[in-house]
Amino acid sequence: MTTKDEAGGLVDLSIIIVNWKTKDELRACLRSILEGNRTAMEIIVVDNASRDGSVEMLKREFPSVQVIENEANYGFARAANIGIRASSGRYVLLLNPDTEVQPHAFSTFIRFADENPGIGIIGPKILNPNGSLQYSCRRFPTIGAAIFRNTLLGRLFPRNPYTRDYLMVEWDHRETTDVDWVSGAAMLIRRRMLEEIGLLDEQFYMYCEDVDLAYRAWEKGWRVTYYPHVCVTHVIGRSSDRCPNRMIVQFHKSMYRLYCKHQARGVISPMRLVVLMGLIVRGGTIILRNYVNHVRSLIKKKTLRFTTRTAGRRAERGEAEDEE
Image 1: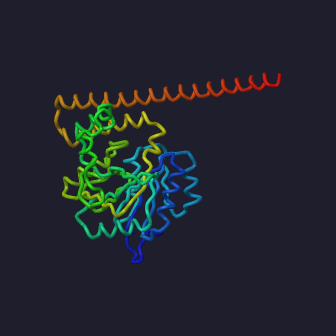
Image 2: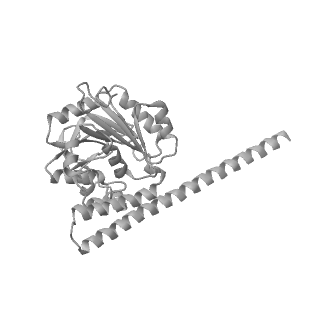
Image 3: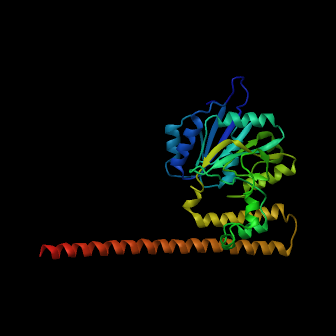
């Protein structure tokens, strides 16, 4: 790995990984990057004060990786921008630490990007660990999608058109096509586009910064394209699962900011209040559901322990009676 190509110019690719307490996943991610990929690239890991041994692991096992240590958890967008500013590649790849890439992925990515100079953002096909498809390219969010996606209504009507349209469920994900936006879990970005439209909006602490970037790209005439000939495996939510309710709050705050910025910009209207109250109810319902499921899980565990202990005592009494 090098920070300069053979001609002495900039590297082709700067890989930016924002890490927060995902040491084991980060190790696997870096190994997948370094095995079978010979692209002139630099890897920059921006650590959001993990304090879980991630930084020490990086320095010990991956000395060629540049590590930037933040003094606090700055969130995704701000940390990613720190990495982008420290990078030099013609292309920037934002990559989650809980991903793994296939061999030769980067050369395929860059060749496609070089052949299509009008594309500003490219998203690969993203797979779950079991090989099933993640819906990582989507249409821009709508109020209908917010009402039905991951809600009680969505469970009651799982085939509702709002969710299916948002996730592009009916579309064949084996074809290369322009889409509204692609997931920031693995997103190739042309540096020239970033120089024109700006970096990630740091007002988004977590979530929706990828949607916002795509909005701005399309507004400036840059295409956003889904490219399934590069595959990435992604384990969803390794960091966010550590504090799920806090992440739910951040997600809904980001959704409201996205709505105000791109769908109700400069408008003070009753709809803003309606959307705000709807997101509060939606987020509160999800948090309540998580709490109920947590309590049920605790009760189930305690019941199982009690049943096991009771069965053990009965077995002991039975053995004692047999001996008598």
